[in-house]
Image 1: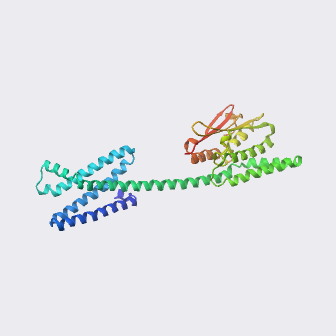
Image 2: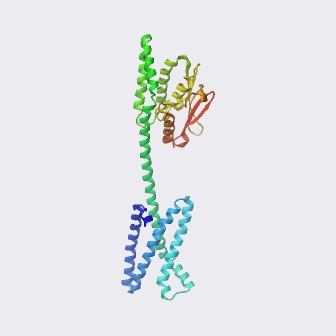
Length: 357
């Protein structure tokens, strides 16, 4: 009984619906035969026995279809063709037993003749019983799969929003804000124009971050402006120790990417690769098309690499790189996951966005 209690209600409802239909069907055909052709009690009993066998076969057909569903479609087709034949064989044999065998036709040839006679309009009746049951099964599985996909989309959307929110909390690094404000405070006494420009750049960064909380993809062009402001602010602090090179293919300027997806990689390069290095270094951003469609992204530096004193993560909370990898996979699939390479000559993070169909 415990096994039956675990059966989802939708399958129980489908089973009850099918047998209710056949209960009406068998009742009408049996009563008509009893009233019009053969008013014997065994006709009514035969109809009941056939219906009972059918109820069992419908239940077994559901189980059989559920087993076949785990295999490739070609196996399912072959399996259901075999199922139709077995269903006909069983129902035909039961019909022969109730209508012919008990009347004295007890030989093997009689059974064969009975089955051959059913290979006509009656055969369609027995085949329909199997086909309708399987049809119900696949309709329910289709609805179930669509429901699961919609639920997964909803969960994914919620996760993306949560991630975008954590992005605002983590990727605008508090240390970056502190250092920027400290640089502005220093510049006010020596170069007010440069201080005002730096304030404008900082406000642009925060405005972009706030506008990015929506889960929408944005043009690469907008992301590059954000990165440019970030680098300009950092150059005030590092001066000539920080160089920035962009190799952006013009055809890629309007490719859609998640907002602030490049920021943790650039911050890694500046904070952990170039920053601790006495003579500084260069951060390089490459965006170019790839053969077959899609775009290749790469952020690299010639900083400390594997000699960096801290794991390169891109956020004070330790979730920047993980966030970026998860967001890329959620938006574009597993093939867009991050690829990281660290050597003694520097650090490189890359990913691809395949052409969307």
